[in-house]
Amino acid sequence: QVQLVESGGGLMEAGESLKLSCTASGRTFSRYTMGWFRQAPGKERTFVASISWSGTITKYADSLEGRFTISRDNTKNTVYLQMTSLEPEDTAVYYCAANYLGAASTTSPGVYDYWGQGTQVTVAV
Image 1 (cartoon, rainbow, N blue to C red):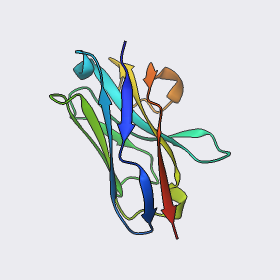
Image 2: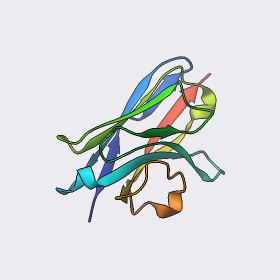
Image 3: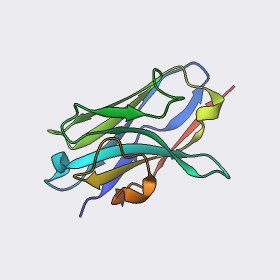
Image 4: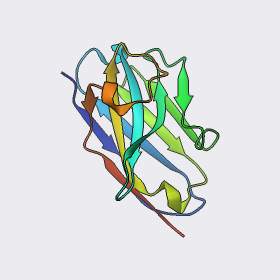
């Protein structure tokens, strides 16, 4: 069982940067591929980025690569999402998710085992 808690969301202006954190409970964090997803109002939850258990493999949504960076610190049971050059279209609730021994290439939310409660990111024009 893994519990995930996201933090770091807020109200931002276009062009600013923001770093989200997701801290996991439990002692097996390093066995989980971690992912970030987001859900805008009235839209489906979509893949943002994922990172392998070792941190050596990452994957990004095509439209976000270059602006967003996922990383993890297994000593702190934490995964991060650094977001730069924020745009109003980035406004969404951001969720982290854990996939036990999953492939970092997994982009489908359906294969992730555990989810956080989400953190709101709002980007004003």
